[in-house]
Length: 228
Image (cartoon, rainbow, N blue to C red; front, side, top):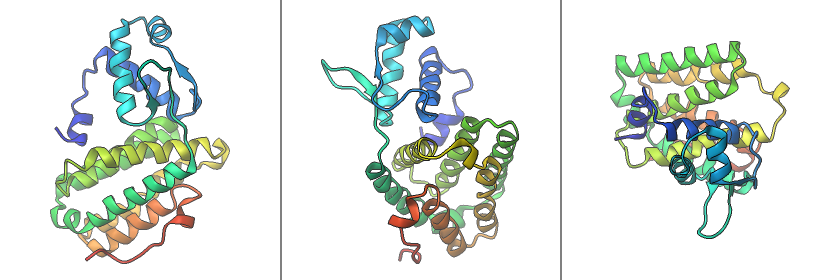
Protein backbone atom coordinates (compact mmCIF):
# COMPACT_ATOMS: atom_id res chain seq x y z
CA UNK A 1 0.00 0.00 0.00
CA UNK A 2 1.36 3.41 -0.99
CA UNK A 3 1.70 6.33 1.42
CA UNK A 4 -1.31 8.05 -0.15
CA UNK A 5 -3.45 4.92 -0.08
CA UNK A 6 -2.47 4.39 3.55
CA UNK A 7 -3.59 7.93 4.42
CA UNK A 8 -6.90 7.43 2.63
CA UNK A 9 -7.55 4.05 4.26
CA UNK A 10 -7.72 5.44 7.79
CA UNK A 11 -11.49 5.86 7.90
CA UNK A 12 -11.70 3.97 11.18
CA UNK A 13 -8.38 4.51 12.96
CA UNK A 14 -7.28 2.10 15.64
CA UNK A 15 -6.49 3.26 19.17
CA UNK A 16 -2.78 3.27 18.43
CA UNK A 17 -3.39 5.40 15.32
CA UNK A 18 -5.44 7.88 17.35
CA UNK A 19 -2.65 8.13 19.92
CA UNK A 20 -0.08 8.42 17.14
CA UNK A 21 -1.98 11.29 15.51
CA UNK A 22 -2.46 13.10 18.82
CA UNK A 23 1.26 12.88 19.59
CA UNK A 24 2.22 13.86 16.03
CA UNK A 25 0.06 16.98 16.33
CA UNK A 26 1.72 17.95 19.60
CA UNK A 27 5.22 17.36 18.24
CA UNK A 28 4.65 19.23 14.96
CA UNK A 29 3.00 22.18 16.71
CA UNK A 30 5.73 22.30 19.36
CA UNK A 31 3.51 21.38 22.30
CA UNK A 32 5.90 18.51 22.94
CA UNK A 33 9.33 20.11 22.85
CA UNK A 34 12.45 18.68 21.26
CA UNK A 35 14.24 16.48 23.76
CA UNK A 36 11.16 15.92 25.91
CA UNK A 37 11.08 12.40 27.36
CA UNK A 38 8.10 10.19 26.48
CA UNK A 39 7.31 7.42 28.97
CA UNK A 40 5.02 4.61 27.90
CA UNK A 41 3.34 4.21 31.29
CA UNK A 42 2.59 7.92 31.62
CA UNK A 43 1.21 8.08 28.08
CA UNK A 44 -0.88 4.95 28.65
CA UNK A 45 -2.43 6.58 31.71
CA UNK A 46 -2.98 9.84 29.88
CA UNK A 47 -4.71 8.26 26.86
CA UNK A 48 -6.34 5.48 28.92
CA UNK A 49 -4.96 2.70 26.74
CA UNK A 50 -2.62 -0.26 27.20
CA UNK A 51 1.13 0.25 27.07
CA UNK A 52 1.24 -1.98 24.00
CA UNK A 53 -0.99 0.52 22.20
CA UNK A 54 1.39 3.32 23.13
CA UNK A 55 4.35 1.25 22.00
CA UNK A 56 2.79 0.77 18.55
CA UNK A 57 2.18 4.50 18.19
CA UNK A 58 5.71 5.36 19.27
CA UNK A 59 7.22 2.85 16.86
CA UNK A 60 5.48 4.54 13.91
CA UNK A 61 6.49 8.01 15.08
CA UNK A 62 10.04 6.71 15.37
CA UNK A 63 9.90 5.53 11.75
CA UNK A 64 9.00 9.11 10.76
CA UNK A 65 11.92 10.47 12.77
CA UNK A 66 9.68 12.51 15.07
CA UNK A 67 10.88 10.64 18.13
CA UNK A 68 14.07 8.79 18.96
CA UNK A 69 13.87 5.35 20.59
CA UNK A 70 16.94 3.48 21.74
CA UNK A 71 17.15 0.21 23.67
CA UNK A 72 17.59 0.67 27.42
CA UNK A 73 17.45 4.46 27.02
CA UNK A 74 14.71 7.09 27.24
CA UNK A 75 12.42 7.72 24.32
CA UNK A 76 12.37 11.41 23.50
CA UNK A 77 11.14 13.91 20.94
CA UNK A 78 13.65 14.36 18.13
CA UNK A 79 15.49 17.65 17.60
CA UNK A 80 14.43 20.07 14.86
CA UNK A 81 17.67 21.59 13.69
CA UNK A 82 18.48 23.45 10.52
CA UNK A 83 21.13 20.94 9.39
CA UNK A 84 18.57 18.14 9.18
CA UNK A 85 16.03 20.34 7.43
CA UNK A 86 18.59 21.55 4.88
CA UNK A 87 19.21 17.96 3.82
CA UNK A 88 15.52 17.08 3.83
CA UNK A 89 14.70 20.12 1.70
CA UNK A 90 17.30 19.06 -0.86
CA UNK A 91 15.87 15.54 -0.90
CA UNK A 92 12.30 16.82 -1.17
CA UNK A 93 13.26 19.19 -3.97
CA UNK A 94 14.87 16.39 -5.95
CA UNK A 95 12.02 13.95 -5.38
CA UNK A 96 9.16 16.27 -6.34
CA UNK A 97 10.83 18.23 -9.11
CA UNK A 98 12.33 15.22 -10.86
CA UNK A 99 8.84 13.68 -10.96
CA UNK A 100 7.34 16.68 -12.79
CA UNK A 101 7.50 15.07 -16.25
CA UNK A 102 5.87 11.85 -15.09
CA UNK A 103 3.17 13.74 -13.19
CA UNK A 104 2.37 15.98 -16.16
CA UNK A 105 2.04 12.94 -18.41
CA UNK A 106 -0.25 11.15 -15.93
CA UNK A 107 -2.51 14.09 -15.15
CA UNK A 108 -6.21 13.35 -15.45
CA UNK A 109 -9.52 14.59 -14.09
CA UNK A 110 -9.27 12.50 -10.94
CA UNK A 111 -5.93 14.00 -9.98
CA UNK A 112 -7.19 17.54 -10.61
CA UNK A 113 -10.26 16.89 -8.46
CA UNK A 114 -8.08 15.54 -5.65
CA UNK A 115 -5.67 18.47 -5.71
CA UNK A 116 -8.44 21.04 -5.87
CA UNK A 117 -10.18 19.28 -2.98
CA UNK A 118 -7.09 19.52 -0.81
CA UNK A 119 -6.69 23.20 -1.73
CA UNK A 120 -10.26 23.92 -0.65
CA UNK A 121 -9.71 22.05 2.62
CA UNK A 122 -6.52 24.07 3.21
CA UNK A 123 -8.47 27.28 2.66
CA UNK A 124 -11.19 26.13 5.04
CA UNK A 125 -8.60 25.27 7.68
CA UNK A 126 -7.05 28.71 7.21
CA UNK A 127 -10.41 30.39 7.77
CA UNK A 128 -10.88 28.29 10.91
CA UNK A 129 -7.31 29.07 12.03
CA UNK A 130 -6.66 25.33 12.26
CA UNK A 131 -3.00 25.20 11.31
CA UNK A 132 -2.54 21.50 11.89
CA UNK A 133 -5.45 20.57 9.64
CA UNK A 134 -3.99 22.85 6.97
CA UNK A 135 -0.64 21.10 7.27
CA UNK A 136 -2.30 17.70 6.94
CA UNK A 137 -4.01 18.67 3.70
CA UNK A 138 -0.80 20.31 2.51
CA UNK A 139 0.94 16.96 3.04
CA UNK A 140 -1.89 15.05 1.33
CA UNK A 141 -1.75 17.49 -1.60
CA UNK A 142 1.92 16.83 -2.27
CA UNK A 143 1.67 13.08 -1.71
CA UNK A 144 -1.32 12.87 -4.05
CA UNK A 145 0.59 14.84 -6.68
CA UNK A 146 3.65 12.62 -6.36
CA UNK A 147 1.54 9.45 -6.42
CA UNK A 148 0.75 10.25 -10.07
CA UNK A 149 4.42 9.56 -10.83
CA UNK A 150 3.89 5.93 -9.70
CA UNK A 151 6.96 5.59 -7.50
CA UNK A 152 5.46 4.12 -4.30
CA UNK A 153 8.80 3.13 -2.80
CA UNK A 154 9.83 6.78 -2.68
CA UNK A 155 6.55 8.12 -1.23
CA UNK A 156 7.41 7.42 2.46
CA UNK A 157 10.66 9.37 2.01
CA UNK A 158 8.71 12.35 0.70
CA UNK A 159 6.21 12.05 3.55
CA UNK A 160 9.06 12.27 6.06
CA UNK A 161 10.49 15.34 4.32
CA UNK A 162 7.10 17.02 4.38
CA UNK A 163 6.37 16.58 8.07
CA UNK A 164 9.83 17.69 9.20
CA UNK A 165 9.89 20.82 7.03
CA UNK A 166 6.44 21.75 8.35
CA UNK A 167 7.54 21.21 11.94
CA UNK A 168 10.70 23.26 11.47
CA UNK A 169 8.74 26.15 10.01
CA UNK A 170 6.33 26.22 12.95
CA UNK A 171 9.04 25.93 15.58
CA UNK A 172 11.14 28.68 14.03
CA UNK A 173 8.56 31.35 13.30
CA UNK A 174 5.94 33.31 15.20
CA UNK A 175 2.30 32.34 14.75
CA UNK A 176 1.36 35.90 13.88
CA UNK A 177 3.89 35.85 11.02
CA UNK A 178 2.39 32.74 9.42
CA UNK A 179 -0.37 33.69 6.99
CA UNK A 180 -2.42 30.49 6.73
CA UNK A 181 -4.48 31.57 3.74
CA UNK A 182 -1.32 32.59 1.89
CA UNK A 183 0.11 29.16 2.68
CA UNK A 184 -2.93 27.51 1.14
CA UNK A 185 -2.92 29.73 -1.93
CA UNK A 186 0.76 28.98 -2.63
CA UNK A 187 -0.55 25.75 -4.18
CA UNK A 188 -2.61 27.48 -6.87
CA UNK A 189 0.31 27.90 -9.29
CA UNK A 190 1.11 24.20 -8.89
CA UNK A 191 -2.45 23.24 -9.77
CA UNK A 192 -2.39 25.53 -12.80
CA UNK A 193 0.78 23.85 -14.09
CA UNK A 194 -0.70 20.40 -13.52
CA UNK A 195 -3.91 21.33 -15.30
CA UNK A 196 -1.90 22.63 -18.27
CA UNK A 197 0.11 19.38 -18.28
CA UNK A 198 3.17 21.62 -18.53
CA UNK A 199 6.10 19.70 -17.04
CA UNK A 200 8.46 22.67 -17.21
CA UNK A 201 6.02 25.00 -15.46
CA UNK A 202 5.30 22.33 -12.85
CA UNK A 203 9.01 21.82 -12.20
CA UNK A 204 9.49 25.58 -11.74
CA UNK A 205 6.41 25.94 -9.53
CA UNK A 206 7.48 23.07 -7.28
CA UNK A 207 11.07 24.28 -7.13
CA UNK A 208 10.02 27.75 -6.01
CA UNK A 209 7.42 26.36 -3.62
CA UNK A 210 9.90 24.09 -1.85
CA UNK A 211 12.81 26.52 -1.80
CA UNK A 212 10.69 29.17 -0.06
CA UNK A 213 8.83 27.00 2.44
CA UNK A 214 11.12 27.99 5.31
CA UNK A 215 13.50 30.91 5.72
CA UNK A 216 16.62 28.83 5.18
CA UNK A 217 15.33 27.39 1.89
CA UNK A 218 16.53 30.04 -0.58
CA UNK A 219 19.93 30.14 1.13
CA UNK A 220 20.66 26.49 0.44
CA UNK A 221 18.76 25.80 -2.76
CA UNK A 222 19.21 27.17 -6.25
CA UNK A 223 16.23 27.08 -8.55
CA UNK A 224 17.56 25.27 -11.60
CA UNK A 225 16.40 23.73 -14.82
CA UNK A 226 14.62 20.45 -15.29
CA UNK A 227 16.64 17.25 -14.93
CA UNK A 228 17.48 15.41 -18.11
